[in-house]
Amino acid sequence: MRAPRFACLAAAIGAACANAGEGGDDAPQATPYRPSVATPAQLSAPGWLEVEAGGLRARFADGSKRDSVPTTVKVAFTPDWGVRVSTDAWARLTDVDGSRTTGGGDTAVVVKRRFAVDDASAFGLEATLSSPTAKTGLGSGGTDGSLTGIYSADLAAGLHADLNLEATRLQRVDRSAVSDLALLDNVRTVRQRQ
Image (cartoon, rainbow, N blue to C red; front, side):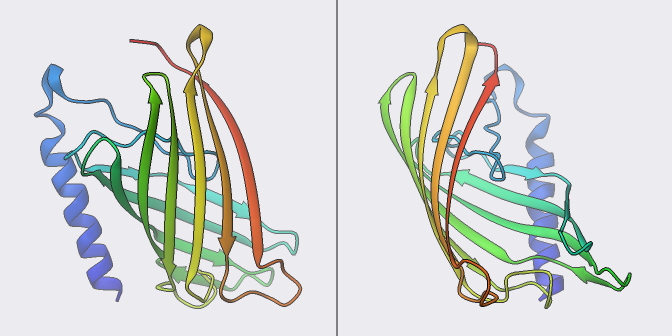
């Protein structure tokens, strides 16, 4: 399972890099998502493959920690419909005793629909299905699903707000954990209006 995942990821990154220098003035701007904070209703430019990657470190109450490289490949088919595939291209869980588990993370497929209100605002809806492709300990251990409602708006003074409300269902959880989660995020970023 590891070789096909890294081959697909390498091919997607290679395709994105091959087109990176060809954009010129007509190339659309990237549409970054911030899934750990808030995601906009806007999709990528239709037909353009976007690849996002970053670094994430999480420390847990028991003293263990998890480092990962979350990676997302996304494409919009129209201004209102798109899909993305996300995974941790690399993850490492370090237990309190120092033992480590390393590998890739679970793989999520997200279908996104945008509902434009006007030029400055839109609603969005995302349906996510996450498959347990990670090594034991690095993922959730089950097939998970979520539904996210989004509202995005350009505000005065160059501000932009994304509001997300998400319901998640985890298939496998510790009996002491909550299996239905809700998240509300509000993010304001400053960007130049065009």
